[in-house]
Image (cartoon, rainbow, N blue to C red; front, side, top):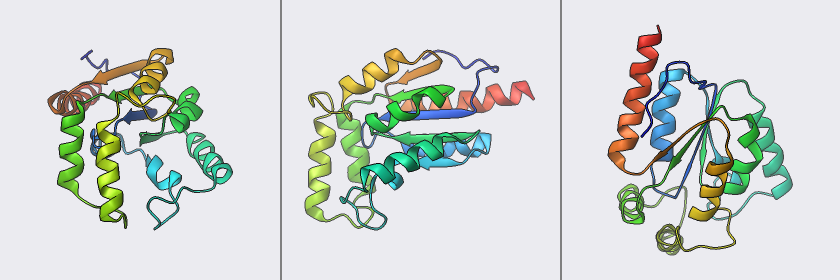
Length: 179
């Protein structure tokens, strides 16, 4: 993991990765440290209270664009298409590339959420397991790798839970050194 330079611009931080990789956890940690609003792409992608029912694409895209127009934010999600829409506004990119086994364990530990059914939950676990083999899909390892590669700014790939925790702690230390 590259070290964090205290002068790295963390105005608009974009976090992407597989389901269960720890995006929400890291977004909360960074958001608390920076006092930036946190934007969960799940909340924009899905109809409120209707897990598994995607929001109208036009409305979803308008909402994502409006959120990205903010001066400061932490945005997290698996949706590569939405990440691509806001990448130009991000000042830092973090890709959580944990092994599928770790992601599956995290999803299993958190359990059913947001009104999803047992069948949907089993489907989610299968979907998470297929991260590296999905093709022609914005939510795949391949798509995230391309987005990461194309991003010209400060960026990190974190590949295990320890690296994610160390990154969050390092950011706090870098900010304390700056003050």
